[in-house]
Image 1 (tube, rainbow, N blue to C red):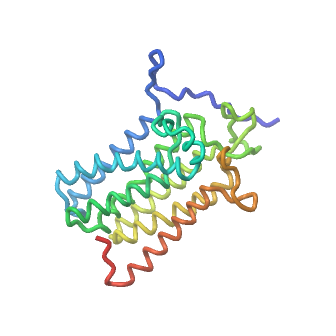
Image 2: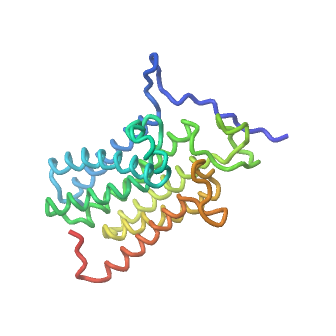
Image 3: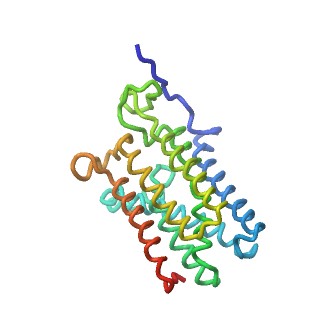
Length: 265
């Protein structure tokens, strides 16, 4: 007889009436803290030529860009018709719905603007953002698991989990797969590149390609979003399409940087 773990974790740290302090929010905070101290570290090592004032702006602007981009990305990529009919729901982030791909696009645009405005090397700056980003992903996916959301497809593997609302069906803990691959392993790889002195564009391209490939294959174990399902051929998901775009973006960066005249800022 197979035994599966029944997910019964509380999504909140503590609750007073209707007010909750959730683990998912804590994960975002931990990710932001890691970003701040990583940037302090590379500044101290001389790998990034920015001032403390620059860092404060990067920190606040990066947080705002990430949150807005992740929310709008979810709205545009995953459920636009519904949000067009219920526009006020866009502001209700506590109902869930954040997209990593949307957040990544917003961060990229913000860093491009910031680098141009302050005459800072874009590739160097985005390379440091890329290196530390998987740590935030690691925490975020753990938060998804604690919330009991974004679960995997049905399975009978020994480590399957029965999530609340999943119909009592044992499923892949795909959130933890993503935490491992897109979070921990990607960070270790990018940190290795950092220690080897890799250029910023190499770290950006490597991050895009590694994440894209990892997410593409994990999507085969992750339950498609209910409102979208499969988009093509009864197996292609929105997450896979967006991941293919990331892979293409990483390859494009490597190709364009072969040309010495390329200067994004």
